[in-house]
Amino acid sequence: MLNRIVLIGRLTQDPELRYTKNGIAVASFTLAVDRRYKNAEGERETDFIDIVVWRQQAENCANYLSKGKLCAVDGSLQIRSYEAKDGTRRKAAEVVADDVRFLSPKDGGGYREAPESSPFAAGNDADMVGDDDLPF
Image: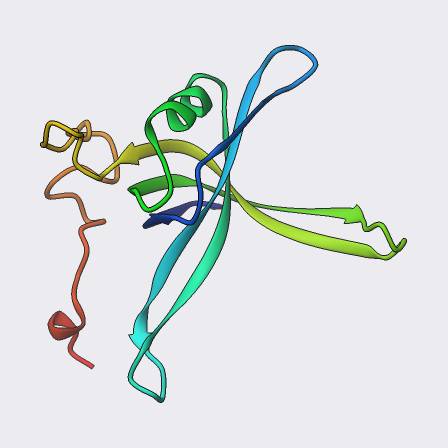
């Protein structure tokens, strides 16, 4: 079985960093990701996807990412259920990130290179394809 998600989008707000009772860092943020195709009005719709990052990478995200920054997330989808304040059962979907790459230029300029093993590496099959490149 396979549960893998690769997303590229912009943060809708600064990451929120917390620590568990055991001192493990966990950060959460929402990523705005445009859909591939335009709707009937000719506009792209956007999905807002909740991201959760753990440990050192959580601290890095909290320190170096902020609202509007572009990043790539490689992780898996997690569905959890919880009881809302009104007593109803609800479900929440979120991506648990295994790898987060900062794609916005640093203040001094330049981009951080992805390692060859990453799905974000240059020449990898995960390269973005524009609408004009699609045969349909």
